[in-house]
Image 1 (cartoon, rainbow, N blue to C red):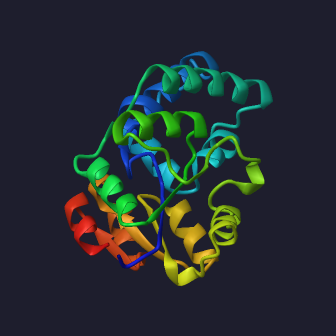
Image 2 (image 1 turned 90 degrees about the horizontal axis):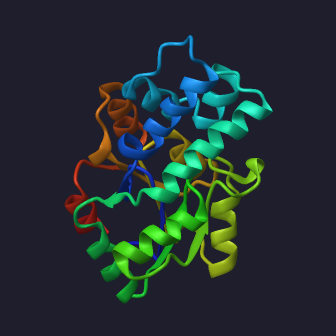
Length: 216
């Protein structure tokens, strides 16, 4: 194996979740919170999640107050609890094989740890070694380097033994903050500008799960 530890994003990197879960839940919340506003398209939602990020979409762009953020969270929570996202083809096999070879699987995501553990259990028959999800304090969430630093501390790893895999800029920024190598998960990209940015700024970029598997 090239790396001792894979630091995996969850949504749109390992599972197909934004089009079927995160985006429609956000649109549903907007029907109550901003009924006079034209709903964001999927492409617009993805662009905002890419830059400046989902938290900033809520606070700076949609300007949700605390009560509105709580409502949006409740709607999102009901979607994530009721729908199990599908893993990208080949990913469950990749994860199981990597673990059998002695690799460490950590997940750093803006989904919640409980749902991430459920998704892995149902699709891979295992749980990640560590999960850092939305339930962290806001100051500890990706792109903050907290998760990477904690992974290195817990498993006594140096930065050369980690590979961060993510489809969006927050994961790239997190990896760069710790000088850890980064692989762009290009198999979910549908927006040319996002694909171009990630391809140009990643250490490695993969258009298919199979090519990523062969690499690691």
